[in-house]
Amino acid sequence: MAVSAVSTNSTSISATQTSGSEIKALEKQKQKLQKQITEINNDNSSSAEEKAKQVQAIQLSIQNIDLQIQKLQEKKTETQNNQTPQNSAAPSRANQTAPSEKQLLRKQIDLEI
Image (cartoon, rainbow, N blue to C red; front, side):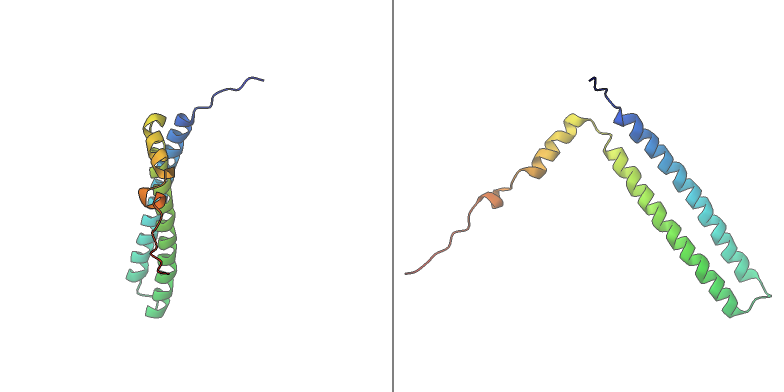
C-alpha cells in the first residue's frame, strides 16, 4: 500500500485566503447595517420608541458579525502561525512538554520528632 504525502501548506494558504474574503464580506454586511441605523435615526415618521427597538435589533446583528469577524481573524492568525517550518516549531514543542525545574524539585518538609 502506497502512502502519498499531503501538502498542508497549500491547504493553509487557501484557508487563510478564504478567511480573508469571509471577513471582507462580513465587514460589508456590517457597513450596510450601520447605514440602516443612520436611515432609521433620520426617519421622521417613526416614534422614538420604535426607532430604539429597530436600532437595538440591528446593533445585536452588528455584535454577532463582530464576533464572527474576531473568530475568523483568530483562525487566520492560527493558520498563518502553523505555516512556519517544522524545524523551528519542534524546539517550542519540546519546551512545552519538558518539565520545569520547579516540577522536578521535591519540596522539603522539616519534621520534629
